[in-house]
Length: 81
Image (cartoon, rainbow, N blue to C red; front, side, top):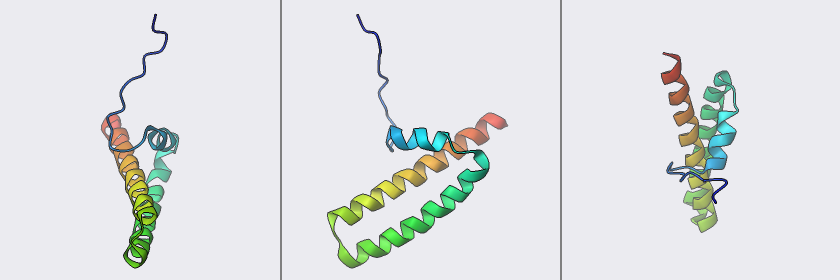
């Protein structure tokens, strides 16, 4: 007997990020997108200097966060039309 059937997560960013972004008010999502773009620029500068696996991992996490924010903004915009 299956009590809970977990759905397969097929998004290009982690589910944890998506859940966090879903709780942010719409008015603040654009601020978060702006901040994540700034953070990506900073992380890219760090990666260009040190070129370590840790730096690229942080960069990938930042890109995933930005993607989740933009995806959530798109979802909210499409449902309010």
